[in-house]
Length: 507
Ligand code: HEM
Image 1 (cartoon, helix red, strand yellow):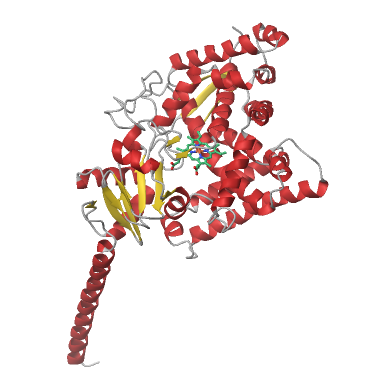
Image 2 (cartoon, rainbow, N blue to C red):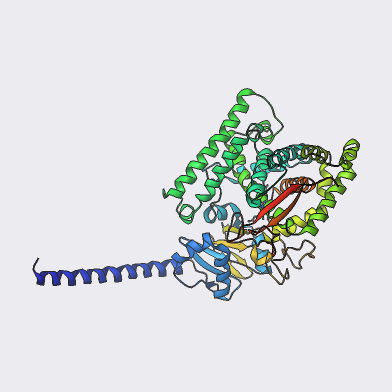
């Protein structure tokens, strides 16, 4: 090409680039103005910056992002856009109380759109009608009735014994991994079918598949659920495989006609259809195992660096056995060097009521663990009509989130909030502790989760001495700090801790 032609072409190209750049900027600005202004409620502070930049922090560093929001707006309530969604973040006693009690705020809708941390199968675990949800909750209540839960006590202990036996007499492991694994096994036992729970390899596969669902839960797969990204496809594949495992268990039970003493039997006996059964198992298993596993992992990690609490909890477990274990068993308990299975057998004779009513130390430990190590952000959608939270308008269709950190890590309510101190007095004010929910939404698996954790921790305490150590091999001091940006497991950021354990010697 002629040099003059080149100059002209270069100029044209340059102006084309300029036009493209200016045009793109103008379009982005218009989209920004359109979306950021759309739905914004007058009188509520809005996050500064381009809304696109909210997406990654909301999913990857949620705790920091929401704290930054409170800080940068200088308000206890603020709003921002999460692509198409208008989100209002609340804190403060009055707003929290209004939030927890508001009739129009829907948990399922909030969770479905903003969290995505469940394997969603249309009509089975998501988009359920109220009647179906009520039915699932009714069955969950049934399996936590005293007679069913009583039957589960030896089963949970039996599973825990088997898993702990595989640990050997001494060793070292990651408590957030291994205790979670153990709780996954016991939760499978409590909520699914004997055929699944008895098959350790299948349980391990199921856990791996749920891990894949978790890792497939990315900003893109949550906000664009129909876009076939790699994450979305991984999540889909894992969900399908979980679905197949559950369906196969239901079919085998129906075909063989054998009855078992398990949750699947409760559902079958109640005449539930397969869709309902699969929805119950798929949804509740992960909701239950994840929160119970994370809490139990942290509880054990905290006990491992607070020897005084370990001693107190051990004394409580021994007291329970001596008061309630059947006579020969109690005699046996006095003998030195009991095996893991003997301790398991002894604990199985302690009645359910004693586990629930005579364990104030375990209750305090669980309560304090939940306060510091539960990075939950309650999410709701206003399904209408518009409502007010502490005087702030929430339009129909808007999402509202309430970070638990604004309650449980508030130094006004809990002085020195990161300190693990189960002897703290209760905080003053309404809804100043929401570890199991509050207002209209309370955890419907509390009874099961508490019993499961108490049994596992007591068996661990009676069998092993353990210490939480850092990478130098010394007792972690300061203790590990939960990472609230890790919304699923709350694992400590950047540092690695292990649990060093050995079987108790005869005392
Ligand atoms: C340590 C274990 C657990 C903790 C800390 C926990 C905590 C919570 C919290 C805080 C909520 C309220 C969420 C919100 O307001 O956004 C909740 C709700 C719920 N939990 Fe749990 N949970 C645990 C275990 C379980 C288990 C084992 C199950 C079932 C087997 C379960 C079933 C449910 C259900 C169904 C709801 C929703 C209630 C509703 O829609 O009204 N949870 N849980």
